[in-house]
Image 1 (tube, rainbow, N blue to C red):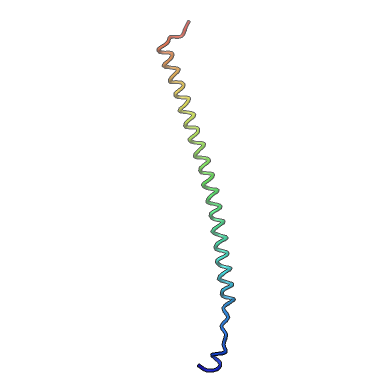
Image 2 (cartoon, rainbow, N blue to C red):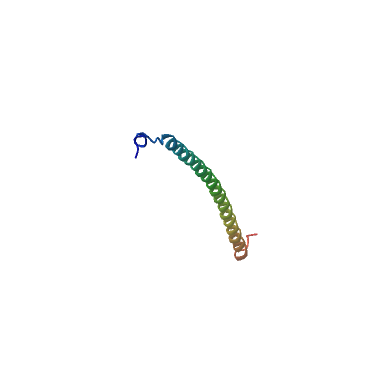
Length: 79
């Protein structure tokens, strides 16, 4: 090696800084996507819970009506 090659200093701080900025940007974007996905899943979960509640209430009303009909058939109304 010549004397000039020994005295050359390779400074990669700019490349390291750019690489760190890219990784920070990617991290922010991924956090934003995760947040959006959580909101979508939460909205979907609430909607599914509401649908399930409506189905259960409907089945309960149907069961009450069937029980009332059976009562009317077995025990004739007083009148």
